[in-house]
Image (cartoon, rainbow, N blue to C red):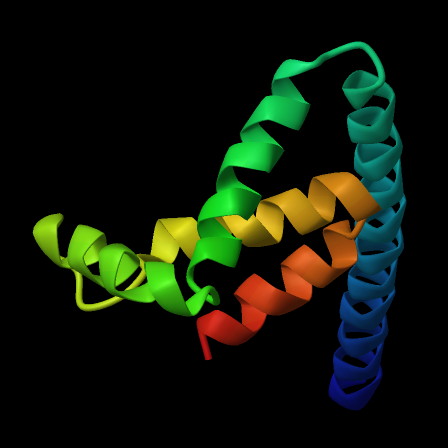
Length: 111
């Protein structure tokens, strides 16, 4: 009897986790579609993306690298802060509809 109860509990947990993952994938797809729809009617998204991508690209231009490093140091960072990385990943998520990538990226950060 105890083995039967344990097996049933295990199956219920697996079923619940499978349903949760299926719902999460559906929610991620819905989110991606909504973000892409919202971007059609707003120019502010394009401005924000342009500014942050400009900052990102400036890190790779030899003549600007020292200025970028000095700027981050002036704010108390040794390099680009975590929120800058977060914004760049968020731009990729919103532009390309990659919510699953976002979950994988930030899930791996915690490990």
